[in-house]
Every structure is written in C-alpha cells, then in structure tokens.
Image (tube, rainbow, N blue to C red; front, side, top):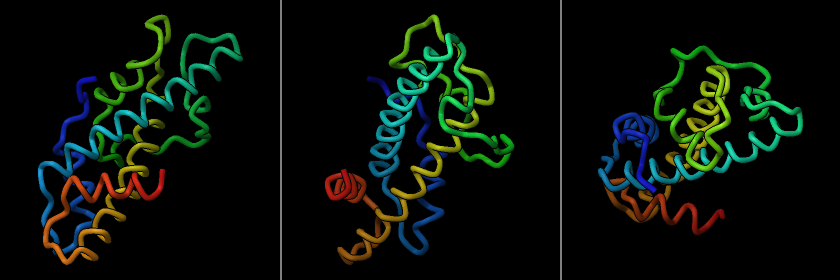
Length: 143
C-alpha cells in the first residue's frame, strides 16, 4: 500500500510534541503510514455503518463524530484523507466533505497521541531525535 499522506503535515504534528527534540524523516514516514492504515480501517467500519442505514455516502456520524471541527483548524490535508478513506472500501461509496473532515480530525488526534508518546520514548532513551523506532515502540507497547 503506497502512502497517500504527505510527510510534511505529519512532521509538523510530531514537531508540535517534540519540544527541543529533532524529528527524523523516518519518524514522519512511519507515523504517516500508521495514520493511513488506521484511517483505512476506520473507513471500513464507517462503510458498515452506512450500509446499516442503506446509504452509499459516508457521513461524519459513521465515524462517530457529531460535531465537525472547522477545516481550517486541521493540520492534515483533506484530499489525501479522502484517498485514505477509499483504500479499503468499494468504489461505490462516496465520502462526504464532513466525513473527510471528521476522519482528518480523528486521525490528527491519533497522530498527536502517538507523537506525544514517541517524544517521551526518545527522551527516555536519552536521544535528541524522535526516530521511527520510537513510533514503532509505541505500537509494540500499546497494540
């Protein structure tokens, strides 16, 4: 599976949690891959919710979101989120704009949580750089 999400916004999210630490390109790439995998999985569940209501359009509520944040508040771009949502669902589904924004918000929260933990792990290892291994370690510990 190719990574649809650009690394730059993911890097920005990690840097927001890094403080004085540097961020390796590998860390941004690893987290982008994890975000994409998580987003595709959430979209499958959302498609099942839409099916229950006999709809072919995914809505924000299918992702469990009742209040959609303004798009400008998000770091993650919407176009790649749309592609991520479609990775594992049938092409007959459409993804509403509110659903894309809701998914981006969920994935951004997910990325912030992982980035925060990765920064803690890097500091604990007495390193100055958050690396891909910090992202991987987080998932080994908490999955």
